[in-house]
Length: 110
Image (tube, rainbow, N blue to C red; front, side):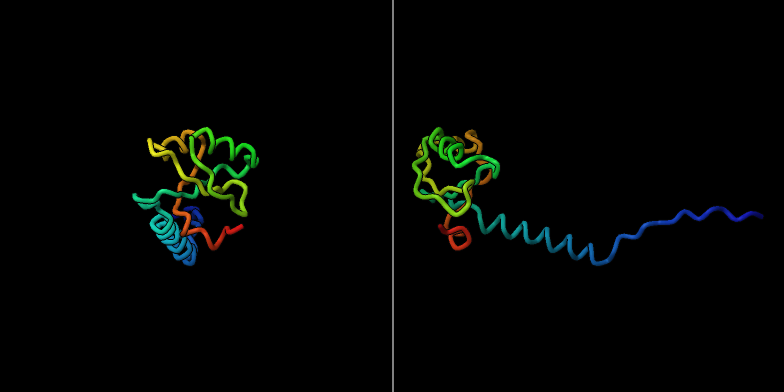
């Protein structure tokens, strides 16, 4: 009787499970913490990082959003969106994220 060839199996390292759980929980907590309140009149808007400062300001202006202030990151602005569907207009203008400005104020203050 011949012995069959043993196919080596690759094992998933045990620590990788913990790392994946840590990353998933961090993303979930960040999603809840950075969520825009429904009564917020000022929001922080993140645009693609490869856009120039001029492109970011033009995109915010094209959405009829009043620019409140800039931040240390060129792709992140604090704006007051238009009352008429302002958040949707910002997304159409190219915004990736619309977040609560108080949640990120300490990290990206200018």
